[in-house]
Picture 1 (tube, rainbow, N blue to C red):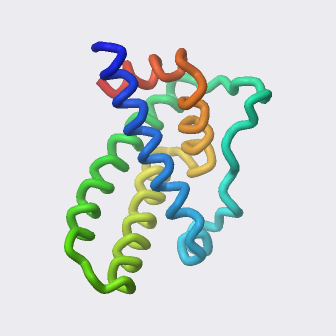
Picture 2 (picture 1 turned 90 degrees about the vertical axis):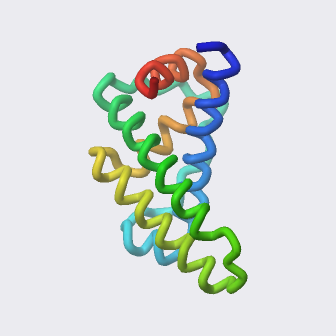
Length: 133
């Protein structure tokens, strides 16, 4: 796979992360998941966290599911004019995304930590990319 292809997939994973992070900030979703406020982006000076292979495999599987969920709900949102209905659809999407991450054996915080680190760790990007092929 080309460098451009790797970057495109990693950007797709980051877009999924951002979707989950944005949806996690919604009060009803936070209340249902029992999560606190979302973690900020990694501190640039913070040491890179090591993730074991099984955790990265769970992440890759969850990222694939989140991509599929996002695609399905993007279609549902197209043409929706009622803001309240759109918010309901987005809330439902967020709940499904959180559920998908948990079903893969991860918590949302760990998923977000990996996604954050992907943005700054080329070696981790290569490892995750290999799992998503």
